[in-house]
Image 1: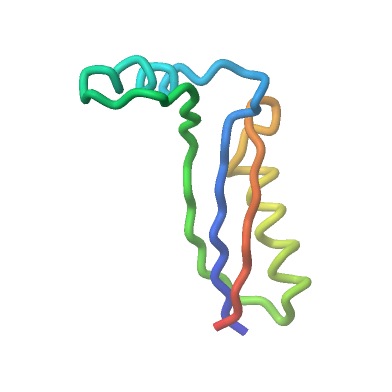
Image 2 (image 1 turned 90 degrees about the vertical axis):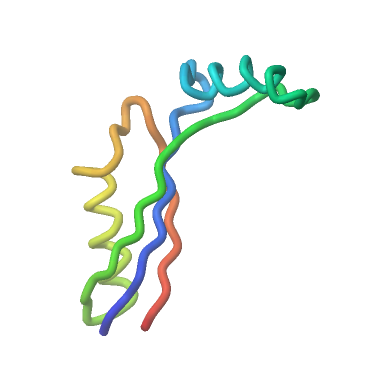
Amino acid sequence: MKFTAEIDIMPHRELLDPQGKAVVNNMKHLDLSGISDVRIGRHVSMTLEANSETEAREKVDTACRKLLANLIMETYTFTLKAG
């Protein structure tokens, strides 16, 4: 079966996000006020083959843990869709 995973990787809340901080600081130049927190991460779309949804989830989780996310500094979530 073919599956599509949509993966979001974000820095831990406890860590400084310099890119997000830069965006917040520059919002005033666009006359945008009231924005106090921006977190910038990555989005990964992955298509994969697996015999079951359970196997597909295991593959995506392994890819995230071992390659896509730096677990010391980042968290990840994903959704999985058959088809």
